[in-house]
Length: 160
Image (cartoon, rainbow, N blue to C red):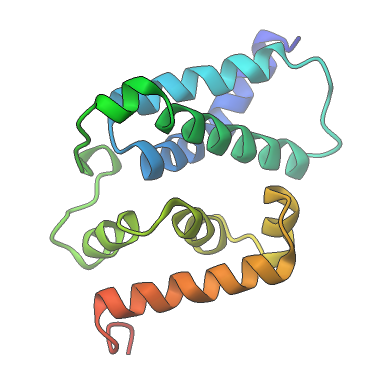
């Protein structure tokens, strides 16, 4: 079990990242907060220690994604209505960044996660593969497909 100081440090260190990952999946602030609390409850009650800060961060990401996937598969979520409220991220939906986020949100979760981990968190394909327990070639292929899908949705010359 973690101490109060360890939990506070983890929330300060990983809290924003956890919320962003949750929002990418859940799209509603109340659901994000529920998963946020669940993730940190699991962290607080985890008995094992982490080998490094990177191991701890990877664990947080994996637990968050699993919790989001479990929640989305629940009976409640299948009956709930989702909204695309980006105001919690202080992004103007009419800006370049807001438009890009809107398009990324339309990708399937397996592509959305890769785009987030690779471009926002800065993980390399090898690291993502280890974190998600997938083959590196699978991650590389999915990332390429995600970029291609984004390019098509944004128009071929969007980044030129």
